Each structure stands twice: as structure tokens, then as C-alpha cells.
Length: 134
Image (tube, rainbow, N blue to C red):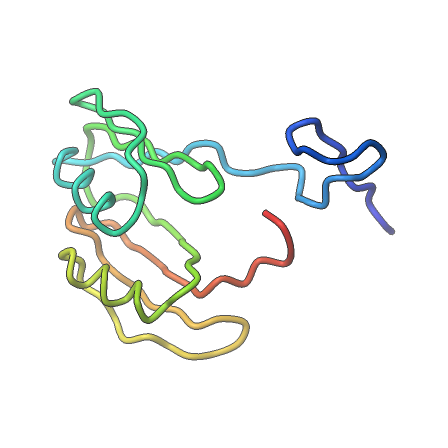
């Protein structure tokens, strides 16, 4: 069974062209933290974009527009799964920023490594394996 391709006005497509992207994306992921400022600093150092810092809550942006909302709460309770274009460079950056990292595992469909951010959250970081425009 073939599903229809979603058409949207968000892209600057010519009339009659369709949008090949999946219908859904992740808008927000919440991450409780015992030290919001420290987690903000870590994630901006490794490459997330700071959208807004409201003191007790910060919003960080990933590629594709997904936002991570860091707010006060019990640390070490989140698990995040990221994709990146350069796994080797990212491994270096994440380790230098203060995360505990595992060795890179090479494999199919991607290479990956695990990490623990400074607040104790589990990170899985994989080489990009998107199936088309995202």
C-alpha cells in the first residue's frame, strides 16, 4: 500500500510539486535538570542552538527545528538519540565538552557511540541515516 505524499505550503515548492518529507516531526523534548545553566552550557558547546534562556528554563534547538526544553527537575532521567553528519568529530567535541563517551561502534546502517551528559542523561549519537529530505 502506497501512502500519499503530504503537500504543504511551508516549503517554497512550485505549484503541483509535493513535499517528500514525513508528515510528523518532533516539536519539543523535555529534559529535567538539577542544573539548567550547566546543561545549557554543555549543549550549546556541542552544537545546539540557544533559542531562549528564561533562567529556570532554557530552550535549545536541534537541526530540523526540534526544541529541547531544559527545566528544573530530577537529573539523569532523560535519554536522547541524536544523528550527526560527522561521527568522529562529534565524538571529540562531546568528550571535550565534559561528557563520558564510549568508543565508536562501526556498523550498518550507521556508526554510533554512547555518552552521559554532565547531568547524567543517556545519549545515543549516530551517523546520519535519514531516508530522504527531513
